[in-house]
Amino acid sequence: MTKQIKLVEFQEAYVQLSLDEARALSESDFVNVRPTWINGEYAVKAGAKVGVLSFDEGLVVSVAPKLPMRRVVTLLCLASGLADWDDRLIEIDDSHALDVAIAEAFLNASERVMRLGIISSYFAVSDDLQSVKGRIDMNRYRLRFGITLPVSVDYDDFGTNIIENRLIAGASRLLQRLPNLPANLHERLRRISAYLSDVVPAGRHEARNSVVFSRLNSHYRPAVALARAVLEGASFDIGQGSRTSVGFTVNMNVLFEEFVGAMLTIEVRRHGVGTIVRKRSDFLDEGSTARIVPDLTWMEDNQPKAIIDAKYKSLDSQQAQEADIYQAVAYSNGLGVEIGYLIYATEMAENLLLKIRHSAVAIFVVGLDLNVPYEDMRSQFEGIANQLPATQHPELLVLAAGQ
Image (tube, rainbow, N blue to C red; front, side):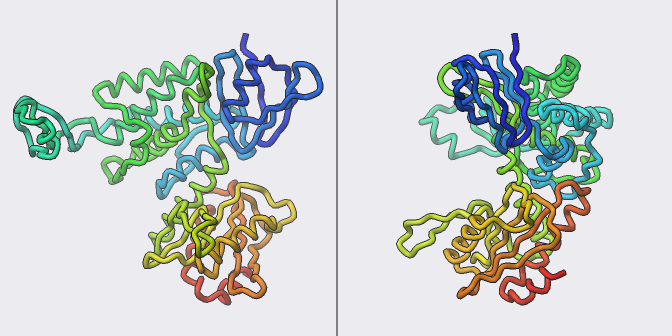
């Protein structure tokens, strides 16, 4: 018999668990588990990870996000770096669990591609053949130590085995492994796989492979975005030893950071004001002892110009948390920049500018409203990107903070 535990982000519940169930939950690192004073009772607390996991022990744990499910799926698509996304392109029931919601959205988008017709194009092939075709790959061929056949070659072929179709096929195959999907969704996924049976499914390491959109493949845009979200977010065979779990989970802390990075990257490219580098490592001290890794670093001419830290947390007092400010100041000092950004996943009455005493550093605190339509959300990032070139002139940011 299946035992279900349903939580919301950061919610705690007291449940009866066997020792094996408690150990499996703890090892999954999906939720926090601790025993109480009552025999067999455990406090199970959700963190920032959302989604659904099914365990060998017959236990299913689901953590729902605080955001509407439609918006979480939109953030997953935007975090993949897909520009000009329109969240009206996806159809999602906000009452569904994350695994069902992502599967349903993916199916709706992919079935639309199938109705409008899958496309064929040229794609690169590296293969070992009995005869020469295309260009001989001499580096691979030399490794054969005198064996003449097969011949290692690279050539271009024409067909449906292009990255767009491969991403859809790969996501469809992964989603079929989710045990909690309704039978009708499993059947629809099998039809997608059968339709693309001649296509080599993409693996998770290929999720970010470049797709160039044009008039010919524009109808692929939602399906490709959702396929990337599936390939990067699917969590299979998690656990230690003989305990495994299968499901679809998303760390909202990581998702928010990747979302902010992807959106800022789009904007700085559009404005031509440097580049955004994620998780750039450096040191706080001259002896290179204390390592610092800002979430994002704005670079120009290969030099850091500003640090950006994304914080998936609410600000009930409309003030940045002191620990976050200390961290941003340390990052700014360590990199020798004068501006640090703290970007929170919460709506703020107004943006704040904190000028640090006895220092040239200023910390700009920005709140993002994640519930607004995509166009309004993009406007928020456009405002941040517009201010990035002004980091050498903090007085300009003072004006911006007062707007």
